[in-house]
Image 1 (cartoon, one colour):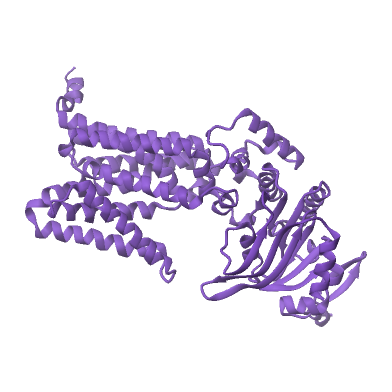
Image 2 (tube, rainbow over the protein chains, first blue to last red; image 1 turned 120 degrees about the horizontal axis):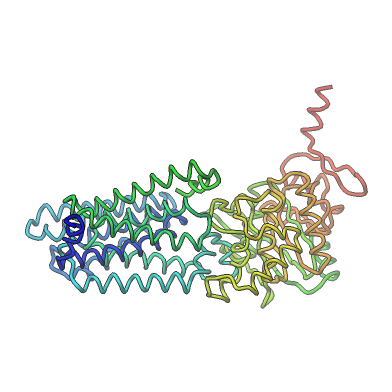
Length: 283
Length: 267
């Protein structure tokens, strides 16, 4: 029974229980939104946004501004800058994201180096910190998760239509730009509330890998919306536990676990079903 | 000549559904569609023909409202429902949806409930049956043949009971048999009273069979019946290459000059 006892050992710590709850919800939330991220080819946007927000988080830590306010405004400004640069058409949206977000990220790093005393919380933003989880964080993540669920359920048809066929959705009077704005806002909110807990690096991975793994298991859009959050939640839950016992970083453990799931599904789907391998066209 | 044919068409058929006046569209600074005057009336079956890059798809998108108009105006009859069928090549065939899900999508604006209701399921079956593909409802869109793919998107356009069907290159990339099937299908739908507007680069296989053809290269070159419009002068202006028009089975048959000459050399 010592093994069972060991397994439950981390549950004795308040910080671990809080971190576990936040990570699991964040995994489900990122898995859900990740479906749209991979189907719309937005994975670079998720990646970029999380890196841009890192700069904002670092700046607000140095300037002692409220994190949500500072990083939130920073994220919005980065988004607008990306849209503005990309609209010129001379350089593509991917390059625009690359310029704006890496510059933002670099600024965050520079601030972290220069102002040592604030660096603790900045590092937490980069890699996440389960130690720093407050009850307020749980509420914030849970609230955004509920909001995300509501958006996906209530907007299901509009989201599906405008993701699959933007032009025809527009002709059918779906307000495509509004749908896209809501989706981007949801992704930004998700990044904002989960960043301090699970970190920049984990967020961009969580927005892609569970959905990509799920995509290989099914050709049904509605099932994808179930499978992807489940994979996200389970890998986060198991990864958190593993990281305690292996004494590894929580975000690294979760990403590695997600990658392992992806590789297993990839191998399995390849052996079993050729038509489902075709679905890799999306990745 | 242009204004005369337009007048005769206006007096011949039903009320105007789409009126383009002085319409221009641009990509960056380059004009793609320039100074187009065009009227589509209820009950017509119209084909816009022109070489690739002639701006016919852009004009179509301007009409359905997904391409901004730089100058001029496009007047659409109020309460007009447009059923749009995109080019098969532009569809993401890897997307995880079944045929049924694709067709029900058009109700996205009016319904929010995620699940397909049994009433919708019945309606989907009806449309699919009408188009002769009743058995594909639950298939993933990748598991369809070329003709079935075209029909599924036709079914989606039909699902919202449109007044007008707008199709972009409905026969591009399909084999001869499928092209015949699609043409017959569209003719039947037109017979049932549907207005149809399509673009094509297929002169003999499609355009020559239609009651009204518009030759298009950035602007309307000629507009009328195939017999009036498919003439060597008009085709040369449209395609920028000399072409010969023969007569075959009472229909104009366009022959590319270059091809004839090469065959002659070979003998």
